[in-house]
Length: 475
Image 1: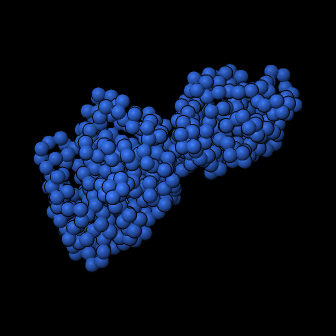
Image 2 (image 1 turned 90 degrees about the vertical axis):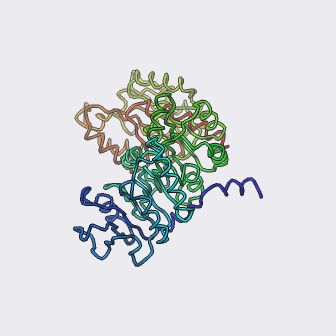
Image 3 (image 1 turned 180 degrees about the vertical axis):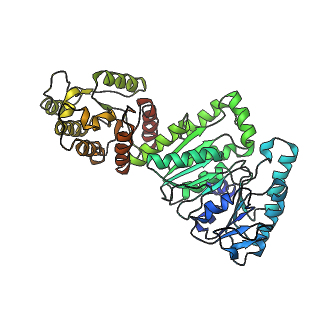
């Protein structure tokens, strides 16, 4: 038996997830106004069953799909979302096993996450009763968000499916990530909130997403891992072929204590985790916002080496700040090649501007056609890996110009899309100035054209070396 085969024996087969055609919400109640049932029912592309022995009618829901027990459902049930009191969960699992349910998500908390002997024993009993006949997400998790088939635990989740998978122990972080990704303009293939990870854990989910044809990029929020799964996680990360980015929770002493309270995870030594991520070429970030912004850059431009920057600035002072931040991050600001510099010199005709790198265009911005040519030529330089620029949103308001410029907005948007032409990122810093409505309008258009935007340099600059290191190691 090969090492790979031996490893895979310890990883659960989750291929059933891509075959879900029916589902039930067990424990749906009047008290919560049938919250989880309604959220799933409005989007799921198959039959949804409500399971509650004390409920006979639900407004807006087919009465023929309400049952006292999941065993009473006449057809198959592939997936069940369980939201009942803790003392009822074990019997519900028995019913699901008898029914032949393939996957359950247990929302109910106070198992091992409670830190009590009773909670730990109940979680162990869950595993004994499931007996590998049924796969479980949770307890103490939100479970599965799968937009392609309409599984969603909250309302107003995006219905578009993307190519980014997200694995997290925290349901709240998943909620923020899903809603924020929608604003940033990218979408998830699947999101897993696996809570305590009694059965399905981070190792299983990374393995699944690594093989999932609907997923190209994997994001993780990880608090810790069970003691007997650490080596396997290390191996899975090291052998991954898809880009993986991780936000590690519980890095400080207090954070580690909070992680144990949150999901009963063993956070471990921070230096060990750093070593694992470095050896496995995993992209590690420090916040959820960084994790999502990094995914956005990769989704728009792919994995790119970004070691040499062309800097474009409207304000000379802001350009100096950009240069300092870039160089402090280990990014170089090289001179343009001789031929490119000659072309750029011919395009600068306003006093106080500079055609060198950083490019300082100042008032020449009001001649929008020359700006487009400058950025086009700068990107064409083989030395440059990407271009970063500051662009205050008020410049898109014609009342700020000495004289109105025809088609300025359209020309600048077309210019900011030039990165796709050269396969090089253009990174606009669209400052949050006192024109919020205009900024939202421009941002929406750029997002639709797969141009990631940022409000200030530190939202993006620290991420560029992380992507570059991954690109270089991957080769």
